[in-house]
Figure: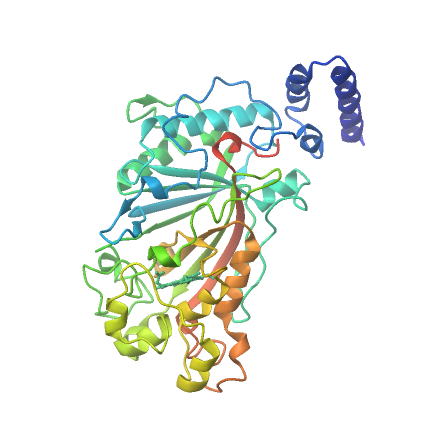
Length: 431
Ligand code: HEM
């Protein structure tokens, strides 16, 4: 009730000031008036240019603005690539899952923005330096009473064979670098006591505003899986070598199998310039994968039964897609992961951008599956295609898990959804 009255008086103030023609001062006044209280509904009143914040933070212009792209998810042009033009993700990853320690306010937004600028000033925006993304979760939008109009929703169970924890966070800080020391230093500057980050003095920290609820760590790249084969879920002496980048062996992320950053960017409305992020934790059980299946059986399950090991070795920047999953089910009694998920391509192009990485969190082999897409429904359709329920009548040998891509070897532990705002709105979007 009290809040409604405050909102009503803010509305009256807004009207008067617009009449006086001083809209900018009004926005500043509103920012001051609403600092420290809930903000439900206000931002809708103030929205005009989707690239601008609803409430200006009145900070100096970002001094790093010409060194970093506006899209926080724009990593590709700043990443390493191989000789075939496939982008290589940074080798080390850390995701901190966060809850707010106080209600959203303009003061907290200023601190967050200044803290993020510290990260930006300390490292280049590159794999050698540091990529960072501040994403906002379902809990945050629920606090603003704005979950219904947000581009994300609470996670749901999407596969019948799993019983994942459905998690809600206020935010997530995604950090990625080739240098593990950069991740440690950035974490310590933001949530610990490091007073300097590189040569940059640390004044504002994310810990002033957030608590860390969970940490997700991992790695991706040549030679890294083989260093971690003592994790649970991996049999003794798996056939992994220095060349392998992922626990299951094969190469993933060829450029023809990934959506472009443009394809995953939201193009209109209040969330323009951002994207959605799904994060799931998958555990892997690779005993049977490595011990009971030979290489050609693994190829059939990962890609498609129509491919041989030699075919897969020849894939340089794309995987051919015959769109014949049901025919393969009938003919071979087994279907591949890639051929199922590729069915959700639009106009022949993938719709999700995968930035997943291996993990041994909890002492168990697994994957933190981070997927970016314009709409969460792109991810959900892809996951449903991966479930393969539609193959039920095509082959009795294909069950919910068996002979059904890689489903027999993974278990979904948890899911969470986030919105990744453009950089200009990364501190408390919609506020
Ligand atoms: C342990 C987990 C997983 C592993 C090891 C894995 C591995 C792979 C591999 C090897 C490929 C083909 C090669 C390439 O990426 O260039 C692929 C493609 C793909 N995967 Fe996965 N994957 C996993 C989980 C998932 C999940 C959970 C999803 C989404 C629901 C997914 C969606 C895709 C998509 C969309 C493609 C590209 C399809 C296309 O070519 O259009 N993957 N994956």
